[in-house]
Amino acid sequence: MTTQSTIDALVERLDQAALTGVATPQLSDEHALSLPEAYALQHTLVDRRVARGERRVGVKLGMTSEAKAAQMGVSDVIIGELTSGMLVPDGQMLSMDRFVHPRTEPEIALRLGQTIDPADPPDDPVATVDAVAAALEIIDSRYRDFRFNLADVIADNTSAAGAVLGPWQSLPEDVSDLAVTLTMDGRIAATGSTAAILGDPIRAVEATLRMAATYGFQLPTGTVILAGAATEALALTPDTAVEATVEGLGAARFTTGGGNHA
Ligand code: OOG
Ligand code: MG
Image (cartoon, rainbow, N blue to C red; front, side):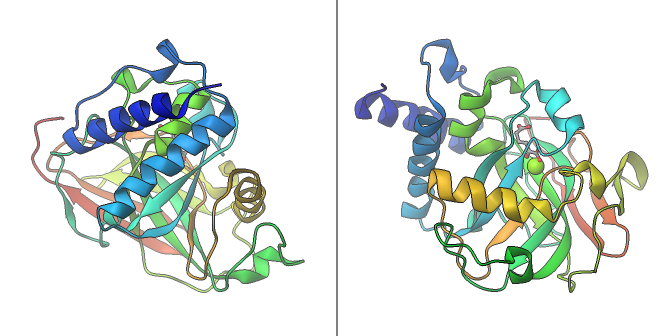
């Protein structure tokens, strides 16, 4: 059992690390958090962003691909929250100043066209997806050396730091094996397939529902689901043009500004 005052102190640590861009030691160095405790901590952390004026806009899955799980040494699928302050308009410049050690990964985003009650899901949840887009996630662990165990990364809102959504498209019949390319300054930096995401990124809907029911996430109309990385994540460098393209879905782009935390 972790007491409420301990939870509050840990939330404060993670919140400050995100606000200042200065890493904090892994919580697991001193605290053995259970998964429900880690999710409770994450919810409180996101509540602080909301209290500062951000809106909840969606969720993101993590460790849905073997490449990512192998890169991070964590194998369970995890879920975090996206807030309005994390959204970077497609094509915009992203200042690097507020990050610790940001990385980016190509993903696809799914959008829910109706509210889902995770406790009473529809028979065909996939039918509630009204649009899909190529996406880029910016992840930035608030922990030293980008290292964590499962409870650490859940508490840290699954390293969520930013998201760029390409133009929304109607959902194709089959998104299970679309080619994904990540370029930096026009050079290919990573390639993969949407098949890397749970075998088929449409499974992200089921996974989201399952975890939303277990850990108390709301799924209102318009919820964005970032399905998870299709390749391993790559470190961001200043003054770089980043683009993810997904076969048949188009692209998502941003450029990095100069910064102190390259
Ligand atoms: C955790 C977040 C993982 C993904 O797409 O697998 C993630 C991390 O690697 O820091 O977003
Ligand atoms: Mg991701």
